[in-house]
Image (cartoon, rainbow, N blue to C red; front, side, top):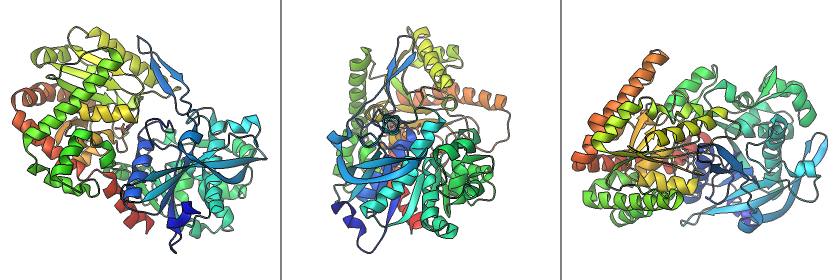
Length: 559
Ligand SMILES: *Cc1c(COP(=O)(O)O)cnc(C)c1O
């Protein structure tokens, strides 16, 4: 079996489990940063020849395709895709018990291959075939759709079904890596297989946590668990490790993993407080350099820094590239984005004007409307210097706050339409993200600390010489040098201030830095701007890449 060849050299491999994974723009099996991270992890593992196999769900109807009305009201269309067209159906089938029935699972393999020769199989689990009754065929349809029962069924397929599928395919696995708690049922399946040998299971499991709020953990009431999951292992065992009152997937993963990590230093520290009694390490996220560098910069890097994609730390020497060429590459990326904006919206942006980008999952804590907290000041800055803004981002269909925020952004776009050119681009996805993080001048990020566990789009921007202007949360705490790699918004992390004071400081920084530092540098200090672009690449991109991240997982968690 060719699929497992790389695992057969007497070394067992790593199984990486993730509810979502961003493989390509036209494969809708992801919703945001968590999935992009999974995709970048797999791409780096392939480049670095790490014996890794990924397990996810096929999500045949995807997350969704976003449509936005004139007023910003979001509607969701299914994003159907046909795995048979892009992935290889494997003949092997396994089964799991769900509500007392045997549900059959098959897998599609999507191989991620590196030009370096490495390949990582990605197994996309599927229940939608004739052998299953209609109710079970829908389990692997919608990513993050449906109710709690639907979610629990999906997590059984992912965690329990995933382990069984790897066994059935002949993979020898030494480590099971859970990217977020959704896949934690895999630890129960391992417990069952090992006759409840907890130490053995813990020694095999790694848990990466991304969620800084207790309320956002997946939790299931025990009557539901008993009805849907049944007794995979005795219920007192589930309660002992998963929580007394409800099955808490984060707790289950914490209790059954020897290695636990957060995805940035600040989130690692924060989660040490959130999870007292557990040792929480920090491995800061990164992005796949080759994937997230636009063609114009790729050409430059290939010429001046050959080998950069395999060894992104070579980007530290970006200073040998003449400023004019850096500025030219960026100008071209900006043209590409503006052509795309023209196509999508009919709006013609001005290539000479400072362009700010803001795109991420539209949800409360990301605060897309912070820049509109004082529209008069924003107007004045625009009148004095000229700015334009590009927005993007989907809201989860049930996230009313997120949906309202999109409408608020639309409202402000209309309110200011005669003074500031602004667009909101529909259906933010991998491809649109690539255009945006390369084509704007400044990448704005205004999360509510400590909610941004890491954030990765700013790292993508840095690979393309786009400057970060961000609240000090997640990765930016580690990347930020004021006026050198970008600019901060609001207080330093850990400062004891009230929410009102914080908000005031954030607004002051946002408008003052824009007016007195960022715009003047852009319009009157092109040399300083070019130096900061170089710094972003040499200091940020050389470090915040998934090759560095992957090597740390290998040496600290996998070995
Ligand atoms: C990179 C990316 C994200 C994550 O960005 P954050 O800065 O972490 O919010 C979300 N969605 C898409 C489509 C992306 O490409």
